[in-house]
Length: 175
Image 1 (cartoon, rainbow, N blue to C red):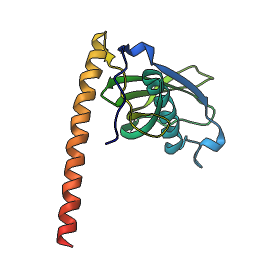
Image 2: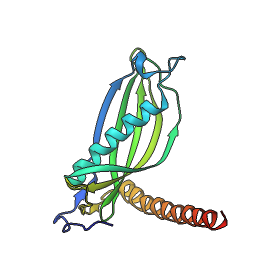
Image 3: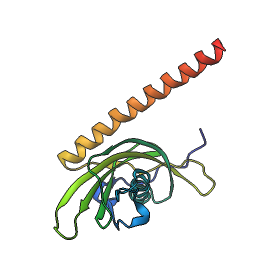
Image 4: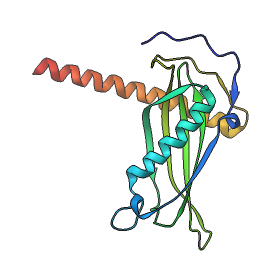
């Protein structure tokens, strides 16, 4: 692991980094059935997630993982997509960001939750070296729950990484 700079002096709250973006779904965003391509939605999720991570860390960030994504409802050409993101937890140089996606049928004004995702971003300097991020101070009960759940997801990612590493080693030894 690269060296890290000093810890930023002040903790931040969840609202300080929350981000939102909207997109109208056009034909070039869709498959032949007129539904938003999953990869395009993932691109939008990555962008709005990065916005929250940038706001929290106040430095460059890179996507380290898209931990989980649920596609709940299809999104159609002509729909208005709204994506909202917030930092769930800050670790030493990384942050978990939650993204929730809503779609609005602009003619009926019906809003539906269509996707949710968790992403991990790492803060880096201009040379790509990891840098420390400010602590996150959850305030509300919901923020506390998301803060706690982010730690559980991180522990799961670390166990899964160790399991895959051991499996690769075993495969190499048996080859």
